Length: 124
Image (cartoon, rainbow, N blue to C red; front, top):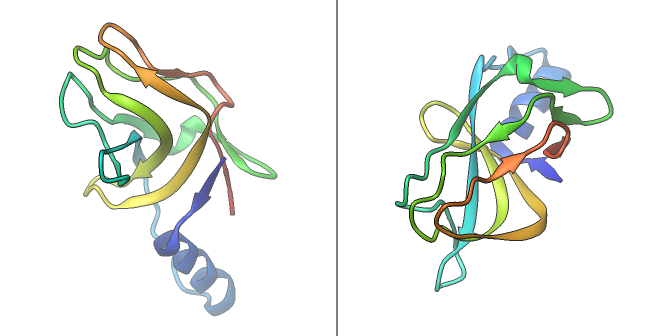
């Protein structure tokens, strides 16, 4: 389950409490995060890794927010690492949401990481 991190939380609270305009993002990018040797969360850096573009219409919002369509990454051509988290990024690469995967996933060459509809959940 993911959680909205500081930037988006501030935007939402500013809108609700102060009537400020929120930034509307028509597209965001889903990324995978792995743990490096120094125990930092990073995205895989090679092996055909790329974030997946999703539109605002690709999400269902009720008690939480979840993906309404499958999200599929390119085929890994090298070892990507052990994915433990997912994140949503804006076009500029700013991380907006960080979420823990239910099960860590070892991503080997030839594998395709896919999140079925409803697998990614985000709460406020």
